[in-house]
Length: 389
Image (cartoon, rainbow, N blue to C red; front, side, top):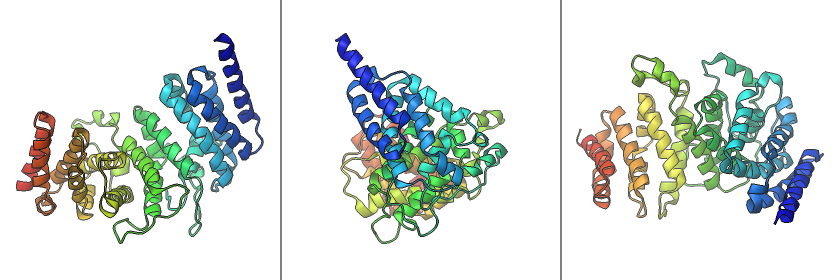
């Protein structure tokens, strides 16, 4: 047994050395695939410095793209994707690795040159990504040099979809429990990038005639699920700044003020609309639905303008649609009910739209489905009350 352990540890070390010393992205991709396979079978035997080696290599692969303010090449994206698979598995399995990667994203400053965060921004960027410099946080403006790794108009990007998905999943896992990292990512305009990419991928605002989304190297569903999942992780985390106000309920995050969240809201609504209205056929509520409605609920509860934007985009139909899915569980039902009540609370005339979409009937059916859940009953009654307003 001890000999087998030493053999596995030696194989891990050989793969890490191959990744560290590779002189081209193709070699990194090959070694990264081997490492991912070994981690899947023997994660406990992985050396303690595995996450550090992977992080350094990912930052190195994006170095030239960040310096030259250009888009990552296909081979670079593929190599980064193969390493992100392993890094994601380590972050989810080992708390010390999650903390180490989180510290790398927080500690490095863009003025010091290419960073791990800079490479992540380059991976997320692509056709449709636009960075709207509305942030009031002046230090974040120095990140302008690392942000414009965006394809010029008219240039398609049919590679790197897997890297985008893995990067979103990794950042969401790290930011979901860390207010500081979520704030750094918001100041780095990750929400702007995600909103622009989703809208570009879906075509227009996604609410016109159904058409094939733009090719980004993967199918649209995992692409949208990962992007909306990261949006959910970034917008729903509570900010400590609100506690500094005499009335914390008056706090508004910088990214949601004025028209700053317009494109983001349009993108999330478009993704949900395509899944629930254009495609349909869901037997259960998907992660895309839960993340999207949860993000829209938080945005609506913090911005009357965005609540009206959701209402005018026929967004209430999305919550009712989720309640109508046959396999909707209690969690999904609560998310949908809270979304409906949050938008209705900010829009005095929303009762008309709620009535048109059959929200009252859907709420009553949900109460009947979960008669022993006081939380479902409470949220359903709020929706019923909004329907009668």
